[in-house]
Image 1: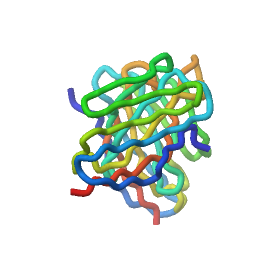
Image 2: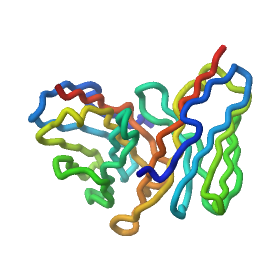
Image 3: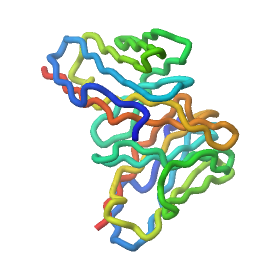
Image 4: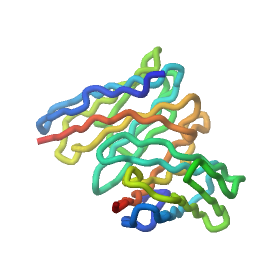
Length: 115
Length: 113
């Protein structure tokens, strides 16, 4: 099963409103990342938050991390039509050779911004 | 810097055939990871290579294999294709560790008929 689970699966809001997406995960992590994917394309890295950080900002993005609850949220403020995309959280897990971590992605939240 | 490139972008194969996909990472990036994305299973990790060594792998059958060359370019191969292998295959590179910021290519859309 996926390490990260996003909630909600789909979100539709009006342009200018704020959008909040949540991610829950199961095991301890070193960091958590958020990515955006426009339809059928590659993913774009948005923000990385380390396990010892509680909040991080990048432009209109605000990410919080609560390691006690194993959850994170992504807030997009003043949404725009161009923010329409799928948003994924990714956590590192399952060490391989030389302790190398891999990213495990959630199922994503499909965000639609209506003009 | 040029981004991650993947070739081909689209591919149609028939069951039983094999396919090779190619990925060129960002210059200087030594870690290359591969993912399979399908509507039903989402994004699933296939494997990661660093300095020509496979450092991590996901839960995929042995039909899925990969390799990395000395210039960090990577290929993945799928043999004996099945209908369920139809997916978007994404390659991502990172500077050192796969659990840090990854840069994704546009993907290869594989359709198996």
